[in-house]
Image (cartoon, rainbow, N blue to C red; front, side, top):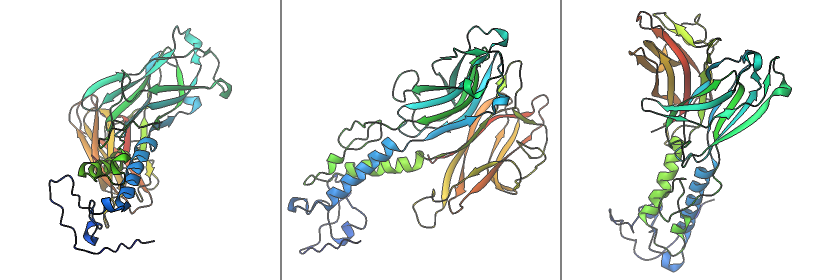
Length: 383
């Protein structure tokens, strides 16, 4: 359905740059409609459009939240240890994260060693910057010497306040996260996600920490300020860039006195991190499936889907992410042997219904420090 507007009289003057009361609305002003020219005569087309856009921006900022991490273990592989790191992962928060919810399925602590205080807590770091955040401790009240069965599973929820307090996570920030456990506590699965905001507190013409803009700035008869339109546009654009979906995350389990399923190689040529028999991308090799279609830019002909990859590793070597044989989406080279979390950006093709990403790595030959991968993750993101 189209809307045809007919007006008589001289065309309005062109907007003057720098004047907050004159706004050039693409494909509207050019047709002879000035944002201010008719507000006094009852025309509220732009008022309605502005109000709807502001409301839509608020809905996206408040309701469309991100899943940050989703991971699980085979129950038969969940072995209690005196201490260690359980699940690991990497993610980037949305620009307005609010409250973050952690839901876990835990097992009774392995009581074979009469553990005194089975407990666990989530530990987060910002890659390259540190600033560790340790979330409150979760104490495991049940213990069992025999193998755990489904009737033993327990559901646990924890809330991290995204606005204040010691549990606060910053918006638009990459985090490496690991679950630290003590005295043979055991975890089966975990999901971390941002909770939709129940209410957005608005300040007229000023985006809030929730990402909201005030629809009242566009009420009928009011001057349409450039700042109000900028607030809507900037909020929607920021959400499009930074409130994008998580793609994948894999992390090893490290435990004292038990097994550690990290990935390690001394090969001077690329091998798949999950199966060293594959030396390049291959349809049969283990990897990660992603679905980039329709996640591209809104500009015609531009199918770029921006992504960011994260790796937690030590030793010296190179890691690469591939979607076809010999085609590198992105690579990271590590020259310092100490453990670190590093990130790199890349671009997927939004015209593809799906892609399979294989992760390969190779060693640089530093004696005693083979390249070792503890965690890899990927998510859509544009700075």
